[in-house]
Length: 362
Image 1 (spheres, rainbow, N blue to C red):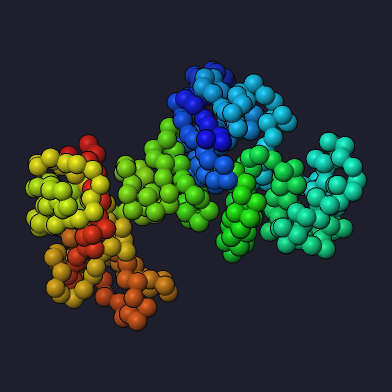
Image 2: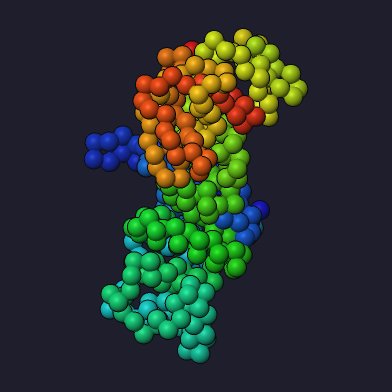
């Protein structure tokens, strides 16, 4: 592996009357060369602390960080051959775009011709050709973030680190910059670690996603694995949206499972994990897996909320005393079931996953 975190723990000492805090606990992660891995999780989960330890801005209490075969725990940031793109653009307002991007190269005292060549190359890479003479105040937010990205890339680092770099942009610019970052990362084949709390960002950008919670890793996997095969209630609820239906396992065979939920029997396929008969479980049902029709499905339900959102119609429907969310995604459907309407509800059973029930479901 190109970049390895081995049993990394970070404990912040007592301060200001607050006892010590374990921000990251026993985290291990292997990242391949050229891979983009996203650390995803809510505020306080340890993702930024992990990124700062990789960068050298924080040092692990225990554990090892290995880059390209070299142990780098004790190396200061400027000797780690990494570049960071921050949440705030951190652009020098008194320097031009060219001077901002060239700043690190000037510190290294590279020849002027090489500086010009490298800056021009990254300006082209981030689609800012002809902007080198401009002041940062003459740029939009998206253009300023491109300058910050170019300044990191011009150093030709072994690893590119990004700490929520798009959080200050509006929704449309965030979408554009996600596409640009992924394009550039693939074009350069640069090993990258990206931190975000935005699951859409993580799904769009990543080769693999690392979901963190309370300082530990909940799950590591591709976007498809994280969404379709969550290994915990936390991951299922954090990556996308999920309904959790209580159920009891009737039988599990090699290629299918029989469960009972809200008085009805369901036959499930493609289930990950092994469960014994009688086990109390949760069925993970995504809103797009819920089928709401006038008749012909397994459950009787009542519409409690109906909202037209353009690309989908979203319903809250009550079955067996439980409120679940479903979505109608057929663009030909423009008539909504009214609130209070009795409907028939079913599931795309080949997509449902099963988890051991949490204690609250017992």
